[in-house]
Image (cartoon, rainbow, N blue to C red; front, side):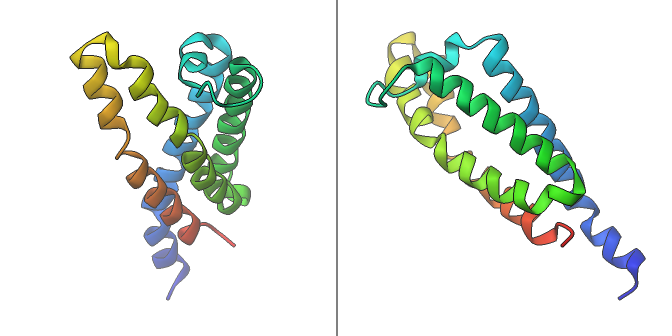
Amino acid sequence: MSSLTASSENAPSQVTAQRMGAMLVGMGVLHFVAPKPFDTIVPKECPGSARFYTLASGVAEAATGVMLIAPRTRRVGALAAVALYIGVFPANINSVRVLWHKGWPARIGTIARLPLQIPMITQALKVYRNAPR
């Protein structure tokens, strides 16, 4: 297979990695700029302050995003994204509990977000498989 064919096959995965990376960097920064909404969805059962988890997840999201954007670190960034998406799932489940009283739009939004973790994880795995070694 020629290098042109191989690079064109990886092009969609490259774009996916860059988009996913940019989204994660943006969300990570948002954890610092506007932390209160993130604080509210940290499960109360977690030890320590909610703000700690908000800031720690913000750092993790931004760092993962940067790794996805850079081709040299894309493979490890993709694995980090899988771990991150699995790691924040308890907060997403908790957001349903916390926001339930906010009415139907909030309920629908928080419930709809839960199954979206699956395609996010599968996309990260696809990026991992197609990333340069």
